[in-house]
Amino acid sequence: MDVALKAPATAGVGAVKSQRPKSPKRSIPMVVKLAYRNLFHDRLSFFVTIVGIVFSVVLVAVQTGIYLGSEKKIAAILDGAPADLWIVPLGTKSYDDPSPLTGRERHMALSVPGVADAEDMVVSFAKWRKPQGGQTTVLLIGTAAESPKALPWNIVEGSRAALEAPNTVAIDQSYFPDLGMTKLGDRAEVNGASVELVASTKRIRSFTTLPFVFMSIEEARRLTATEQNQATYQRVTLLPGADRESVRAEIGKRLPDTEILTQDEFRKRSQSYWLFQTGAGAALIAGAVLGLIVGIVIVAQTLYSSTKDHINEFATLRALGAGAGYIVKVILMQAVLSGLIGYVLGMILALAAIYAAQDTKLTIVMTPELAITLFAVTIGMCVFAAISAIIKVVRIDPAVVFAR
Image (tube, rainbow, N blue to C red):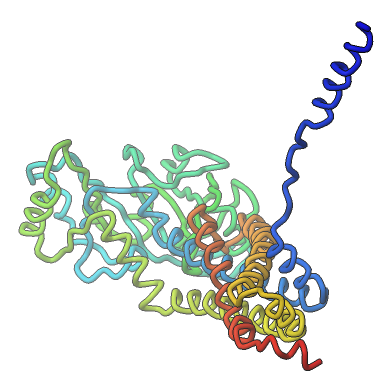
């Protein structure tokens, strides 16, 4: 009797255990499935689409990266030796447009209340004669050794102290072939005077084709026949708490034949001159826009062809009750998936190109902001390209299904 009573209870427990709800499986939305199948249905069209997007991403990334790299190279010396204020000759277009000051600027600047220091900097064009023969033009840059911002920086061989010896120079390793140098200790001629390479830097390159040649300010003056009290630029450092605009105005009154620029103003003036007044920046921007247009055209053509090939299937969906909005979502999802795949592949190639160009004269910059912007532009480009296909879809008449 007891056994009979217990049996149903045991069965009941088993029944309860067998009725436990199973965890719901996550399923892929039908919109994504349809978009995926449409994309991969015609592998050749899909390949052409991805190639177009990858080409667009790489071209836009590299062209924009070169533009940012050009900005960085133009302002490299200014960023390497920043100042609160710069005293420059009147009409100076950019940093590498040197002309000498009169020689009284440093003492006049030091006499202004609020000025902590004023440092001479000599910048001048010079003739460099290679050891093997032949010559080229270089840009000499001389700064004082006692300056906390003495140039150059990023020295990989030798030292800044070695430049205090007479007839010594430092150049970037990327310019060794152009200047006929192979190692430290090699000799060449600057404006007819023999000089020895005692230090080398890495990735300090000019925007123009003129290599930077660094030396002490005394050597720069001697080799360019500059007076001992003369300089090309004055780097002014202010006392803590000094009002920059007041000091700037006072220096301007005492030195009417000069311009007093802030670090940011001198930087932007140099960049604006080389990138826009010379047309170099416009060419880089035009290249990026061209890549974007090519990507839009290829993606638009492929999406339109894909929609046209599947027009009967889309009409069937409409006949079964799917709204135009649902089909539009499918096409947009196709565009987004294409953009995602193309962006990833394109960025891999772009980063490879940037890495390969690190130690060359071509500077390509990739920043997180640029990567995010490029991602948004790529997706936006693909969505915009889907417009032609969307127009085709919304005009579908479901009745064509019954006319077949």
